[in-house]
Structure formats: C-alpha cells, structure tokens
Image (cartoon, rainbow, N blue to C red):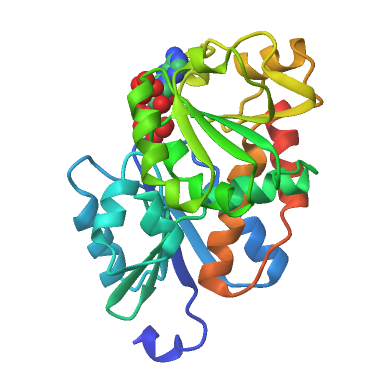
Length: 282
Ligand code: ATR
C-alpha cells in the first residue's frame, strides 16, 4: 500500500559492482556529488561473484536500478553485456559506466576522460607533447582514445611484454601518432609526460626506466594512489620531474563523468578530491 504514496519521492538507485569492492570510494564520492548538486540518489557497493556478473546486473535492473559503475574484474564483461556503447567505450574494449535506458543498457567508459581532466586540472599540457604510457593491460587500453584526442606529438606505449604494446599501438594507429615497444626502447628518448598504467605499483615495484627519461620539468602520473607515494612517484621526484601526481584525482574525475552521464549535471570535483586527500592522509 505504501507504494501508492511513493510516487515522486522514489530515490534513484545506482551502484558500483566489482570483486573485491569493500574498499571502494565510489559510494562516498557519488553521495558527495549528490549532496552538492541537490540530486536525490542512493548509491551502494555490490560485491559480485566471479561468473555472476550478468545475473547481478539483471537483478539490479529488474529492481529498478538506474545506473552502474563497473570495476575490476568485470569491465570487459560489461562491454559484452551492454546493448549500445559510446565510441570511447567501443575502442577501450571495456565499460565502466552503464546507464539503464528502459529495456536497454548503454555502456560508456569514463576512465580516459577522468585521466585527461585530472591532468588538465593540474595544468599538465598534452597537446603537442611526447607522452609515455607504461603498461599495455586494461588500464592502459582504457585511456588511449582520450589521450590521443589531445593530439600529442607522440604517444609511446612501453610494456614488459613488448609485443602487447606493439599490438596495442597497431590497433590505435588510425587515431594518432602512437608507437609501442619494450622499456629498452626508451634509452634514446625523452618524454614530457609519463603515465604509469602498470600494476607494478600494486606490487611495490617499478618498471625499468632509464635515468634520463624526463625532459626538463616533465610531469609524472601514477594511476594508483595511496597514503604514500608509489615507487614510480618516488623515482619521478628523484629524477627531476616538475610535477608528480597520483590517481586520486582520476578516480574522482571518472566518477564525475559517470554522474553527468546519469544525471545530466556536472558536479564540482575539487572539493571532493581534497576531502578524499585529507582522509587518505589522516
Ligand atoms: P590492468 O587491467 O590493471 O591493466 P592487466 O591487464 O593485468 O591489468 O595489465 C597489467 C599491466 O601491468 C601489464 O601491462 C603488465 O605487463 P605485462 O603485459 O608484461 O604483463 C604490467 N605489469 C604488471 N606488473 C609489472 C611490473 N612489476 N613491472 C612492469 N610492468 C608490470
């Protein structure tokens, strides 16, 4: 009976799905966005068992859910599941944002634009610059199109397994000046912007970088973040980087783009980034 009095007041449901998911900051970020923009939403984190992704999305949609963020390890499955994809999601081979449109699922990928926006917020110029992207896995793949849209002079992908980097560069050759190879190919080159999209920081490791890799006042960006600088961020400081940034801003920026896709309203990211930064350092 209470449903009779419910119309107009129903709060729209959103969630992030992943495995693991317990430490996700997405619910906190989206509730801050909602408060700031006056949008009534309810956002939760849903742990999904491996093999149970399609069913979990089906249940969420059947219950009236309006949108999802998708994180590790389900972004490729989400790409396969959706009915329609944005160009950037199509090329990324991964979907991190689903919008429920009636019976149909629309998939987008906001990771790359999140990275580019965070670099922009930090006055890191990409157009006409030489960019090195370390890693050729899902994280690297997801950001290639938005990076190339900034028209760098060169986007070089370096990877421990060089053939993966070369294959990725070949696949995106139509979208800009992109090359791929191993870390040994970096000996003779210098870069203005170096982005770490490897899983090395997670293991407390550093890809093998030559000492003279950076141009004067180059910018270094690690897509990971934590209370302490990653090994790559430490390396960057010791090798003369002008700016050294971690991935906390990217996390908030990709969320803001998802929020915009769902709600048509753009939240302010700066206060959310600084709140999370304070919590991280506490
Ligand atoms: P993700 O989705 O996070 O990108 P992934 O697809 O498993 O995860 O890719 C991990 C990336 O980090 C790969 O580029 C991997 O290099 P390989 O292709 O040679 O495996 C890279 N990587 C992982 N550990 C690394 C390390 N210790 N040093 C350098 N690169 C590393």
